[in-house]
Image: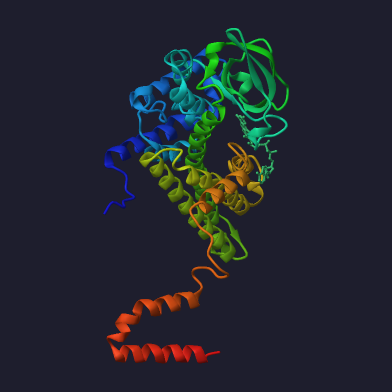
Length: 426
Ligand SMILES: Cc1cc2nc3c(=O)[nH]c(=O)nc-3n(C[C@H](O)[C@H](O)[C@H](O)COP(=O)(O)OP(=O)(O)OC[C@H]3O[C@@H](n4cnc5c(N)ncnc54)[C@H](O)[C@@H]3O)c2cc1C
C-alpha cells in the first residue's frame, strides 16, 4: 500500500544540510546585508558567491530546474520540502538560485526558447549574471488578459512594441523584460530605447514601451502564443509561492505558541485562556491542511503535469492566501502591541497576505476557475429532485432487494413491517 508521508533518509540529509546552512549563514547574511545578491560592494558580492558555491557543491543550485537545464531535477514534491525551509529566510531563494521573478522566466525559456535563446538568456540567468522581470499586467486591467493592449508589429526583421505595463516586479533593476503582448511573448533588454520606467510604484514598476524595436529572434515561443506561455509560467510560480507560504505560516505558528507560554494576564499564562487556545488549535489545523494540500498538489504535478494539476494549483493559490492571512493575524494579535510593530516579522507577514491573494491572479478568478472546472465533472439531475432524494433511494433499494426478500419470507415481513411503520410516522 503506497500511502507514506515519510521522507527518504538520503533526502532528509539534504534537508538537514539546508536547514543548518540557512540558520548559520543565510539568516546572518540577511540581517547584516539585506538584498546582498545585489549589494553594490565587491566584498559583499564575493562573500555571496562563496555561499552560493557551497550550495552548488551540494547539488542544490537552481532547484526548480530539471537536470539537463543545470538544476538537480528534484521534481515538485521534493522541491516543496526544500521550499518549506527556504521560505522562512528572505535571502534564501537568491542564494539557492531560485528567486522569483527569474524562476518563472527561466522556466518559460527552458520550455519554449530556441537553443540560441537559451544560450543568450537562460544560462546567464541561471548563473545570476543577468536578472529579469515579467511584464504582463497593464494599468487598465490585470485580471482579464483580454483587456491587454500592448502589441508588437513586425517591421522587416524587427518587432516594434507599443504599450504600457504595470506592476512589473523588479523591472527597474532587470537586464531583460519578458513582455506579454497581444500577439506573443517578447524578450526586451531594459536599456532598449523607448523603454521608460515611471517613478512609481518603486518596486513593482509601471513601464511605458514606446516604439521599442527588438530583433525578430526576440519573440519567445510561437507567434500568438503568449497566453500559453503565461499559463506555463504562472502555474509553476503559484505552487512555489505556496510552498514558501507554508514556511511563513509555520514561523507565525511557532511564534504564537512561544508567546502564549511567555505572557501572563488575569492570573494565568495567556496560553491557558480558552480563546487563545482556540486560536492555537485552529491555526494548527489550518497549517496541517495547507501543508498536506500543497504537498499532494506537488505530488500530482510530478505524476502528471502543471496543466493536469491546474484545478488543485488554483485551489492551493487562494487557500494559501487565506491561511497566511488568518494565522499571521492570530499570531500578531497574540503578541499584543508588540505584534503591531516592525520589531517582529509578523507585521510584514500579515501585510503580505493581500499580495498573496493578488500576485499571479486575484483569488476570485482562481475560485471561478476551480468551480468551473469542477462543475464539468457533474451533470444536472433529471426531474425536480436530486439523485440523493431519499424516497428515490428507498424505491431503488426495494427493486434491488426484491429477489433476496422473495427468497426469505421472514426478511420480507421485517422489511414490510419497517416500511409500514415509517409510512405511518406522518
Ligand atoms: C506584489 C505584487 C507583485 C506583482 N508582480 C507582477 C509582475 O511581476 N508582473 C506582472 O505582470 N504582474 C504582477 N503583479 C500584478 C498581478 O498579477 C495583478 O495584481 C493581478 O493579476 C490582479 O490584477 P489587478 O491588480 O489589475 O486587479 P484587477 O483586475 O483590477 O482586480 C481587482 C479586484 O477585482 C475583483 N475581480 C477582478 N476580476 C474578477 C472576477 N473575474 N471575478 C470576481 N472578482 C474579480 C477582485 O476582487 C480583484 O482583486 C503583481 C501584483 C502584486 C500585488
